[in-house]
Structures are given as C-alpha cells and as structure tokens.
Image (cartoon, rainbow over all chains, first blue to last red; front, side):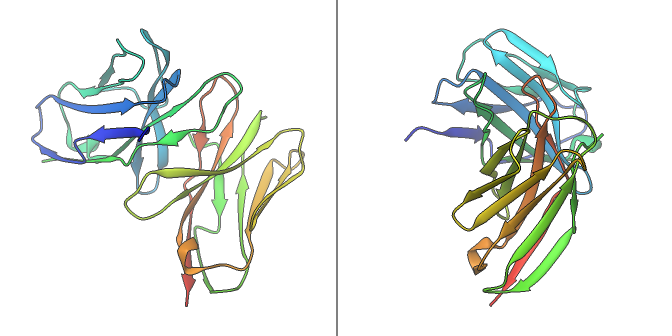
Length: 113
Length: 110
C-alpha cells in the first residue's frame, strides 16, 4: 500500500558517530520534510526539499545533512551525533503547490549516548 | 521560534463532552491546519482552514479562524475515548513550510 515509511524506527548511537535516518514515500510527492519533536518545543523543521536535488534549511539545520537524489527518498544524516540530537524524528511529504496537507511517517526515536 | 501556541497545554474531559482547544499565532498566514498525534505515532492531518475562511466543519470537528486576533479554535463535539491524543495547530506563513505549536494533550475519560 502507498505510504511514507521511516527506518530505523529506533536507534541508539554514541556521541560522535554518523547516523543516517531513512525516509521513503510512494506517492511521488514533490515536497518532503524532516522534523524533530522534543518535549517543550513541539515539532521543529530541520530541512525540507521541494523536488529532487532541491533542498533548503528549516529552523534547526545545524548538525544535519540531507540529500534528495530521487523523488521518493529523503535521507537525513547526523554527521557527528551529539546528545542534544536525542529526539524523535519525523519525515513528512505533500504534493506541493496548492496542496498543503502533510502526510507524516511513523517516526524514528533516536538516542545518542 | 514557534508560530502557534496552543491553549490549554492539557485538557481532561468526560466522554461525550465537547473539547475546545485554542491556537494563537504571530504573523499573517495563508492557512492554518490542525493535526492529531496518537501516542507513539506520526501526525495525522485533520482539517485546513484558509485565511479567507472563518469557520469550517468536518464530521465532529469545527474549526474557527479569526485573523484579526490571530487565533483559531478546534472544537471536538461528543468526544470519544479514541479522541485521546495530542492536537497541534500549524500555520503556513508562506513558502510551503508549516510552523507547529507545542500541542494540547487531550484525555477523554470513560
């Protein structure tokens, strides 16, 4: 069935390690987004992409890298994980232009020790 | 910084009662959306209201928007246990980027 998936669902890593969170959607939506959700901060936008090979920073991009070589995939990489990056990460997508409804993945719970 | 601020942060009511949540925001918007998040899950879109609309209904949901006061409310009528979740407002100031509030945690008691 079509949808948006994230992997892994849970990840524990050590400070300083590189971690990549995967996001895949089967709708061919133009726009994709990465958010982090922390208590007291709600959801904050990390990066977003309007199409393949087009990405832009959100509110909290420092320490993260994204790429989008294919429309359906939008991986998020923590180049050198820090404890402050412990969070729940959500990927989302929408069709673009006049369609503003976002569809969210199930989330990845990342713990950095 | 957060654009939307929900009020109250937590709400507990009896099943069958109505639940009202409020959202205030800071800048002009194209539209405002409400999302629901069940525990441990991703967000699910509930309803969108455009800046030129004042009220919108969807099933048991009623959303109002007052752009002069920069505020919105979400009313859930005849609440059910399954409505227990966190509810977020999200505004679209522009450029496809939603800005979320911190959410209202709604608990429906049987």
